[in-house]
Length: 154
Image (tube, rainbow, N blue to C red; front, side):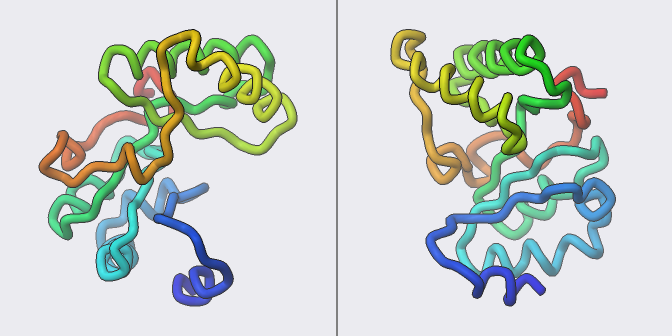
């Protein structure tokens, strides 16, 4: 299925798990997928929807450049909640140098993100592709576990 999905289009730099909490917590199921990611030289973005995600340790072992989600933008689908998540993204980026935010293509999310991105330069923050943010396992502690579905780790 992975080969078929990746053959359907080009121009991608990596993969991301979506609705894969059980899958990313299953090291035996995940390992062959990440081995193929490594073979193709792709990046893997862990949505970190499970505190038991095995992505970090396997990616480290395979030498995969990877990143993990810091903030979900639209856990609660409201203007206020999305604005708060974007503010949290900015705080994390300032504190750690990078922040990875993910969301769904809901109208509210897309609209809020468009407004936020337009003002990034004024906040001293730059948008970057995931290929620029993903790092080799030795670059930062991607091999650890932790984090949960929500930004507070629950």
